[in-house]
Image (cartoon, rainbow, N blue to C red):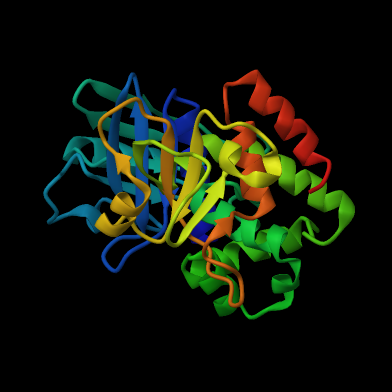
Length: 309
């Protein structure tokens, strides 16, 4: 089973147990992270993917709350041994052992429906709208010509690793979801926008500030949501995207940490050669920010905006 697909399957299993889960890509030392949120609390676990997962593979390691093993399927005997060692794990079938403070998950003997024989396990569907994969879907929707570009070019444009770009484009091709196909494009836009507030938007947020002026911005700032000129609104709040938060930007735009918060500052993740780094954000992003608002006035504008995407 593909490692990216496996990580998403593990996340889906944990969502069944009441957690909000966000996955992140690998770094040099670990295979990724799983951020769990429940009851207003959040913990991030380092992931090690082991296929197969055995008790021997965990020996010599001090059990720690910050580490979780992810695998395709853990046997009953192995699961019992891991519990005795205090090792945390989750598999694609939903079997899991997690003990973090007063969070306790202990699921045994679970198998996917119609699992079949060990050699004919059904494929697990990749979630295209996790934060990093949503970045790939975004650039392909905004610049459909990139679908035929080398994977490295797509990764650079989306600000993700080559592995994430490769697994995402592979899944798009597997499902025949071509961003330049009218039918598939509509489904991708709706799926991306629905997931945006809880995944990508959250991961990109840098700070929430007070802005004295929501009509004019200075420096390398891309405006979105109500502040986008194409929204034709008198903004009472806004969203902007920047490469990084600098003192110069704060001073130029007179953004402050005191005062009523009315401006969300997020990281600009896309980097497409020849595209501007200031002005209005891509229309798909403006739509996502409008749709994410709780204000009925803003959501009605989003509905009209959707017709032009």
